[in-house]
Length: 240
Image (cartoon, rainbow, N blue to C red; front, top):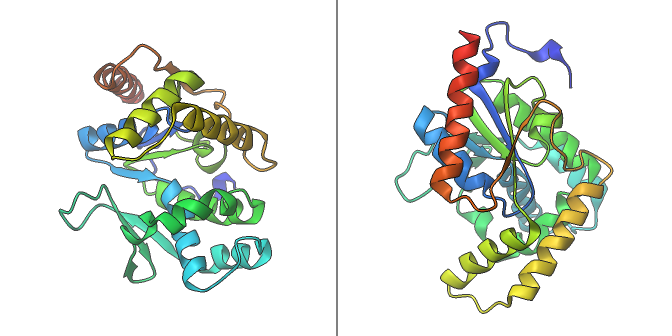
């Protein structure tokens, strides 16, 4: 990725990236920031979910890296502002098919982590994410947005929390949904996800050098949001 594809009138202060490990609160923060600013909220994980869903529909093996990569390179995935008031934070489209809720199926949950590891898949979907991000007025959430997908973004946040704190949050969420789950299982699952994210060959999880680091341990949702909004407002004001 290079600067040759940058729109000439792009205001990079209208591109906000939020990276961080699983269960750090990125999605909640991203959605609130986007709503406050009137921007598109884009959780880039939905692209991997969309590809996984499509592969399942087509009977493609999750171990077939070559075919999955080819699929990611040719299938257009679009993320837009929500068009229906059914609780969605955005629309997800594969071609002209709305798959916003379809990609939340348990089958997708079971396979998306495998698909997202493949280097070719990540490269192809990063290009699609970049295409959307360069339109501006977007809050993009993921694990490699500030470092790989949109390194020219003027406002980058790395949201973190201790493994134990993230496990407590995820455990509480799953309990609230009525799931029978043990804290130790959630803790181990997040520990393994951290290992995969931080050691993968392509775009490993790490803060961008110019990202503002926020440790959310001991902070509630409102405190994290206010801190992030202050960062955004300050950076945007400096640029005017």
